[in-house]
Length: 277
Ligand SMILES: [Zn+2]
Ligand SMILES: [Zn+2]
Ligand SMILES: [Zn+2]
Image 1 (tube, protein in one colour):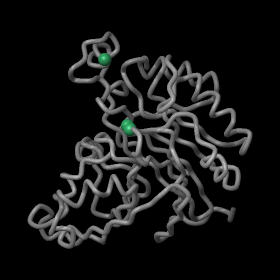
Image 2 (cartoon, protein in one colour):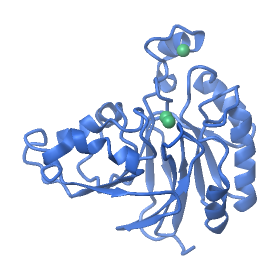
Image 3 (cartoon, protein in one colour):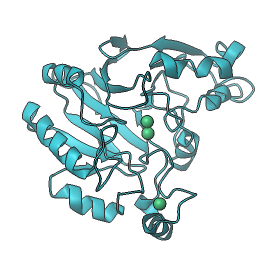
């Protein structure tokens, strides 16, 4: 890979929870109760990642709240990558607020939305004739495909996730001498994902850690994340691994997660975490 050029890339975790949020409003388990008391890093919105203000990965129902609470603006977005059609990753009705009169007189650059066709299909019925006013362009992506958009090259990799017939993607994003992997929601990676990663080992990997003390096929638990991190280190010894997308069902508090993952040199995401690459 080329040496890095330009300013470091800034990655901001807008949310780090699984589908129901952490704490989950309809749950009274001890972990949710503790999170309500603790506040701070134990409060997790639904997952999304903002990169350099112009690239957003996923557009779930808490993205608006994240932009507000973190003092961020979405007016520079040019590329939106959707991992899959689950509702915690795509809330298409909020795209409507890019159009007039909701954005006032703000001039917005066009926004390309890439993702599996079945996810993009959810956008059309909501946006209908407003696509142009909202300055949206849809670009379907399938596993194995690559797109170039401005400073980013995006590789779509297969995820192990979703119901029969639903396409779910991981994203390997490269540019300006940097490369990182966004890998949620997924179980242990399919061979198709490894084939791409062996050719293009990332410097940073953000990994699904939904299952906590449990194990999964469509999500991962602590032991699976640790095993995956060690496999990734086989490709690139200096890779930084970050656990992300936590469910309250079997994940303890942030402090406890730090202890558990810290033993293996894995970082733990929290809402508002900023990483530089
Ligand atoms: Zn999810
Ligand atoms: Zn709970
Ligand atoms: Zn999902």
